[in-house]
Amino acid sequence: MVQIPKTPAPPSPAPSRSVPTSADVARLAGVSRATVSYVLNNTSAVRISDPTRRRVHEAAKELGYVPHAAARSLRAGHSRMVLIPAPTFPVGPLYSRFLTDLQGSLAALDYTVVQYGTGGPHGDEAARAWAELRPVAVLVPGSGLGPHGVAVLKRSGARAVVTLGPETIEGAHALLMDHDVVGHSAGAHLYDRGRRRIGVVVPQDPGLEAFSAPRLDGVRQSLRGTDATVTELPLAYDEQAAARLAARWRTMGLDAVFTYNDEYAMLLMRALLDEGIRIPEETAVVGADDLMLGRLLRPRLSTVRLELPCGRELAELVDRAVRKPTTEPETHKVLGATVLHRESS
Image (tube, rainbow, N blue to C red; front, side, top):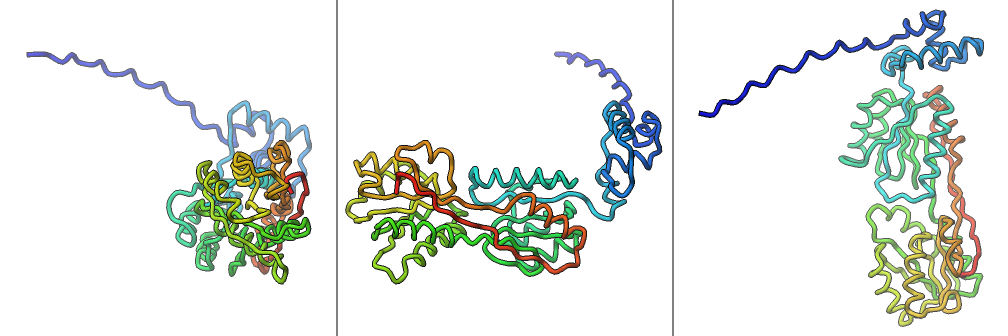
C-alpha cells in the first residue's frame, strides 16, 4: 500500500495592514478630516492654501490612501464616472485621437472616464448593463440607443446622456455627425476636376453601414443633375478583394473613385497600381480622414479632412448637463469636412 505523505499546513499569513483612512491622512498632515476631503475631492468652494494642499497630497501618497469612490458618490448624491461604451464599429486613428482628447478634458473637470466593452447586448438592452454602474453621464457613440434606454439610464441616476451619431434621441443631448457632407465634398471635388464616371467604395465590414451609406448618398447628392454617373463598389478590407476589383476596373470605365476613407484608399490604390492603372491619369482617388500615411504615399493621397467635435467643448457640455440635469437637451451639428487636394486627384 502506498502512503501519501502528509503535506504540512501552510504557515499562517502575516496579518494584513489596515487600509489607510482619511483620518490617518489628517493626522499625518496635521489638518482636519474635512480639509483632507476638500483637498482630495478638489472642492473649489473652500479656499485651501497651497502649502496645506501639498501636505495633504504628500501624506496621502506616503500612506497609500485613495479616496473611496462609492463613499464620495453617496456624499455628493452622484458619482463622477462618465461611461463611454466602446463603439460597435471599427475605429481608426481619428476616433482614437478624439477619444483621448475627450478623456483628458473630462479628467481636467474631475470626472473619471470608464470605457465599457462591446461584448453582450446593444442598444436599449445594453443601457440596463450601463445603468448598473451608476454613471453620472453616458456618452454613446453610433446609433442603436432609443428613448427607452435613455429613460433607464436617467432613472438609475445618470444626469446626462449624450449621443454621437446621425440622429437625435428623445431625452438625450445629441452631437449630430452627418456623414453626407463627407461624400458630398469628395463628389464635388472629383466633378470639379473633370471626372464624370465616379466609383464609391462601400465597405463590407459589419458596423460601418451607418457611415458608408450617408457618404454614398452625399456623393450622389453632389452630382445630381449633372452628366456624371455614380457606381457603388462593395469592397471587403482584404488584399484579394481589392485585387479582384482592380482586375475588372477598366471594364467598368471609371475615371475616379471615392474610397470611403484613407485606409481603403491605400488598399485600392496598391491594387490599381499593380494592374498598371495610372493614378491620377486614368483614375483619380480621394480618401477621407487625412491620415499621415496618405501623405507618405506616392502619389500623395487627396483626402477629406474631418473636423470632429473638440474634446474640451464636449466635456463642458457633459459638465453643464451634470450640474443642471433638468435643462432641455442640446443638439449640435459637429462634423465638418474639407477636401485636401493632392497628387492622387
